[in-house]
Image (cartoon, rainbow, N blue to C red; front, side):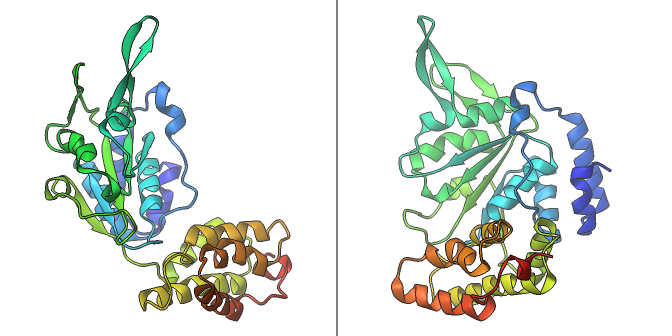
Length: 306
């Protein structure tokens, strides 16, 4: 078995799906021009059912839309899927000023002639990459409308003033969206119909233990339990609307674990990675209280790492 797929086997993902992924990888080689875009994720994604749904959809040529609240692993899943299928990754971070030229390309002047400077979506289509459409519900309608033919059965891009190009057979698109962020809006039905939608579940103790175990195998079990407890406690308070989701930052908590290894005290590390993510003084006090119950201020590196 290909080494990159072994973690799927460890999670009990269907052997039939794993075999089809191997066939996909063997069928579609990565062009040399895009080889540097095949990137190993910063952390593995844990969740057998979600992985099976996503892999099955991609194998059948479908695009995915990952929805759900903050810290549910949407971008991590997208990164893992691209790595699992051994495809170059092209990221588009949507915002209110994103336009069709950013996605497909714009005219530029080079060597005494007008040429197309290819956009992210164009290159993704050309090289058979996985396009990650981050925060797709922040984009204006006229920006995402150019993707309609790209995302449906036509699988093509009609570039105004240039030729129409067909998508590489390995090209897929994975959209992500959070609910309730400033600047977000409801997605157009025509756009949503072009995706299979996966609603990402909240993190559990089991998923967090998998992530921490993979990333910090040298950490002490008792300390890992407390770090996981910090996240779960904050997640519960956010679900109960006691705090906002600003401090609910899994990336920040994992970063805190990393810098503890350099010798910084665990309390200072978590303060940087989690507590200081909220700027409301009253909310920060609540978050600090949660962290102090789990991470004593007198802890040192030796309390976390063996």
